[in-house]
Image 1 (cartoon, one colour):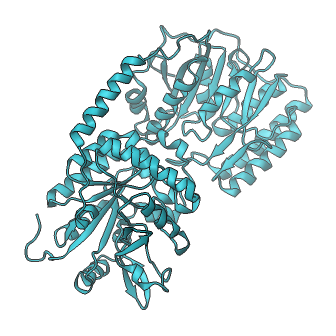
Image 2: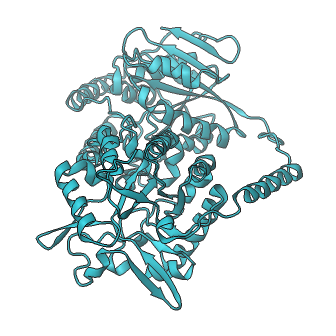
Length: 581
């Protein structure tokens, strides 16, 4: 509880951003909003860690939440409100004001307010921009907020000399628009030789020297009548969160450094200062007719369900094409929840056209991949689990899946989903009777890459140029694992090389054997979680060796070796628990 000897008599503001680890503003360029559903959500865990810490000190705070969070996790938003905290808006998606026109901003405010009020049962009185802060050129947004009936905003961070011509913007101040008033509560700063340094946020608590920040907060408490405006994010209360490995080094340091120290850092301030939410500070009531609101919403939901009963997902659908998706895995325990969310969406969106089965091949992982596969996918009736006794590489994993597939259409995908598996819905129809392979190509003129390092692009394109000189099919990409195979044409290929080289060799064997190959333009994204298994120097040398072998094979008119024809092993029923190969 509060320490009576050190507690400040003044009241200051505690504001908390209700965000998950993949909502972080620094990752906006890497993670698109349309991909949020793929990530394992940890928001309930981090939010409850936050709530329990607030309860420990008897503090009620303001939680700024996305409308998307309210629609996705309404029970969590409701729990926060029920535990005595204010819900305020951060807009619907995690966007900055520079991405929105005034009309779009109004629409975003309305959509987020509706979602948040429905979930919380509270009136939504406040706003904070989700990404970046308001620059002087963005202050038109304050007029819109006032016009739309908001009581306060907290989107200004007057850092460095950004508001040097208006020094009063450093402190809480009213904003007038017509006959309406909006209170602005800027993020608090410390003045160092005339420059304003941010000291009020979780990131600064974690990055700056502890003593320096403590002195800055104490100075504010002594020197100014305006409240100190403190903030942090719920994801900062979750040091075990998955790390976005694709982020640049400085962004990773900024996001992950000292996460484990955050609870104790906050305890220091919670025990020494009187902290409250913004609406409480302004004397505004947030609670509407919560119980009545929820009762009406519940009755409305029941009425809608009675009018529109749930329909079978495949009602009226025609015959579905059987197709197997092979997923080779090696030390992928961290990314499997991401994969699971993605494949669930793939089943929902492609299930009306394709009877999907899944073959997960664990390539002798040394982490918890094998156990996690069974834990996460074990209840799927259409899943097969296979395991290599020793590590044989990604190509061997694909070949194992091909040989155990019970369908003529077999797709291979990357476990990290660097190619969107939903794209299979457009690739499978290209596997016509005369085609044996459809391969994804980000380097096709209609393809794209996102956030992939330039050196990797240069390497891949250079290798593709060499393969074009050797093989019959003149493709833009030869090394993609994201493909659709004809099982009868590919399952008996014998590979001489493993790992990533084997992926190129599979295509080359089909090419030299006279198969028709179709290229499909797709988008390649950088891996989000974990690390790539590719060894660059070894891979370059291996490709050069493979190319030399293919040149000899083509010049001599040799035929690629193939396994004797055999019926691939058949599982009993639709699912196999596990098998070791």
